[in-house]
Length: 271
Image (tube, rainbow, N blue to C red; front, side, top):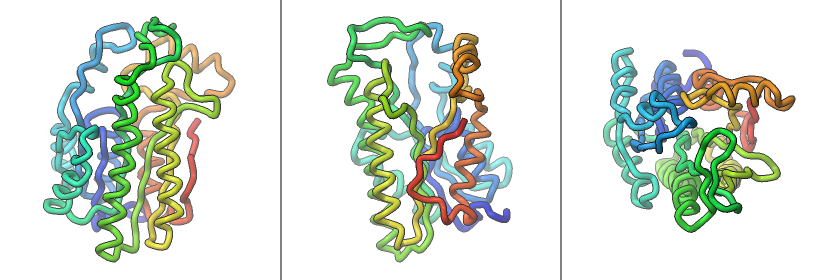
């Protein structure tokens, strides 16, 4: 497809068993890209913020995504992987290279999401349990959103340079704002760390034909958006849409295309 990643490319997409990650894997495959769909099944706590349908999507494996891509004539593999293990980054690249080809697109979508706060543990206005920030919440968040993202970028860079690569795309997803992320303090901080790593990659890897950007989606309905969240968006003058995962995926697929070669070192805010 003109302007798309093309069938000569191979992507790793993390968190690809549902939501934005699933939509990105499908969008890249539709443009001829081979995709390694990585995921980790998560059992969310019961509560009004985690509807049963949302819990089910996060708890399922990524095989259905790879099957969907292959049914459409594409190439894809699904691999469950715990990104909090430092050895995982190399294992993912080994698998992708052996079965799909050299990886030149990396989408850091997965998150170790946890709601924590500097206040005592409490329930917020959406019915979520917000934990008091502690070493466990910090480690859960930073091991995936910061450490894993950094190690994946490092593995991408090492292999890309070693093989003489001249084209590459690194795309991450972020959230939060300049004033942090109240009641999701570790999430906001870990995403800020990932943004810093990605901006550094953009500068360091430019000479090797690699672009690196972060995408800040609007509120995206991956199954958790309820009436209270929709009202929050409608009442906030700085929020314009509740997005569908496929809409966000289209932007990411564009950033992974030849046409986006001049877009690098940006945090792209979608509204």
